[in-house]
Length: 278
Image (cartoon, rainbow, N blue to C red; front, side):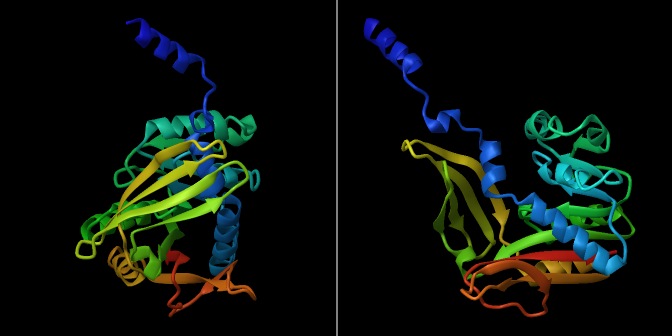
């Protein structure tokens, strides 16, 4: 019994590892999201397609509502809605992202803890579903139901914005590491089943002290292809669907500039934006 007490005391008094001190949502925002570029692309593309600046935005699968908050910060006319089924992550967003805004800005943001298939909100200029979140729908019926729900949430000239990923590396069971100043981000494609298209992915984080945060996030998805996504969007009632492919710099790396493309390239890995117009 004494040995057990000593073990507990040592555990209570030892310094906490970097992994134990880290916040997984903050790490996610640093390593995965780039809401500034995302919002800029939406605003510029919408203006190009519609001849006006979009004002209202609904962020589906919003998580910490980082994109919705960035949208609000664009100007006093901007309003945003965030929808996510997970109350815990919404609460984190309220404490960290929403609380950091001015009261007047907070008043222009509404967060809903709800299912994106069922939520009813006022019509908006833009509905966005990013970070491949809609890949959780594994059948055409489920995906079509979501796209129809998103379409119902749009104004008559509204646009649905999505992102998608692929390339032959997307079908591999592999890990990819990206180093940041205080941690390493690890994208883990743990399993892929070619008959069903099911894939299981994790995000891990590793820290300079050697500690790890394993399976900080887990995704049970279907790996959808662009032809499938475009077909289901059309079935859901969207009239014009455009894929925006990323250009490359002189070293052959992505340059962050996305333009309409009908063919794409057989890259090992790619990320695209998709617009679907009512």
